Length: 536
Image (cartoon, rainbow, N blue to C red; front, side, top):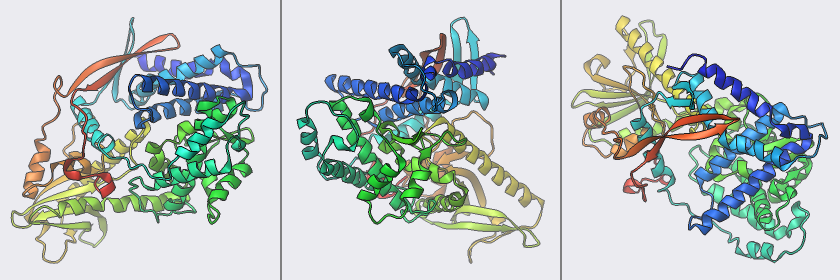
């Protein structure tokens, strides 16, 4: 339970802290100033990490951290700043305070999201606020370990062209570089753009490239996003050598950016739609994490921090999902991915699979569908999967959407079960299958990768296809069902350790429960089952 008034106090801090930042007194220069500071800090962290023996490249976790920081700063700027005002000159103190707040904001974000949904115990003592999620840390740890298979074990194929000639050219530049596309020869930008395009295309995209995401196919959007990423990657490389406000986060007039993208994609007809889809203007219901082009005054800021690879698919799908004209088609494409459940279950010996099985009442009125039905006719045992395949969870808001989808699936199953108890129903199984009542059925809700760690009581279990794939192969359907019911969960002290992370926000101390993974990260996917090969 949440301590009375603790959540209210938390909301008050969350509303006042960003509003009170003095950076907003600087008007239109506020956002470029704080973005420059983010670029400077990220670059400093990168060099310090490399000097300490770490990797030079920013991984998904590092990129995600800075994307979250920048998204906060951008959203605050649209709420509290006046883009039309000249304002006073920003001081270092103004800028540092804003970025420090954005970096420490993760604690507030966790507390607000979890507290609002009743999914965390929030208390306040003399030592500060305490945020303890009401979730099973064993399930959270299992999810993190499975995620490690996706990220740490998945080989990243570096695709050409080789950037070495372009890097040598940048290193040879001397003197003051004013910024813009004129900072490097055109062939250098072309090399960066082609490199980024090829690397994005080489990623294991789940949704089919021919999917209509609103006036263009996903394949075309990926190509245009690669172009945008190549431009921002070049800006970051120039910034690393010649730090300037201009190159920290390049800004373009819309027509100039359009012409630049068209230069590298002359046959594309969707550039206008692409820019519209990915532009953030402070509109409600959108986030800079899915709209990384920031409309600031009469310029679009193409910040490197919002364009990292690990968010690419989520970015495009979220952008498409906000448009009613394209969200329906996208939903159908994601729905077709649920067929992977059938493909995996059909590989179990003695199992037959049917999908989208209609359930009718005595008057032939459709009551619903059984998404995936697996039947072991010899043992007269079956598994019914209510499959949900939302866009991958990369943020706390995404996780809530996954949980909502699971809740919806459970409600659908319970409604069907209730209808079945009331009277004569027809389940339109394939020809030759037994009657529904002749089989012992197990019902589950199945996601792609998300495991529900909430401590809630439900007669309908939920699991993920990613977890099921780690349990395969099995000798029978019942063996899989038993394995899911008796799953050995990670153990505290052996596989993970609970702790507290302290953060200070506007003079208030926040303690957030953390999980430290003790098990070594995976170095290879089990049995070579990589996402690039069609596994989940």
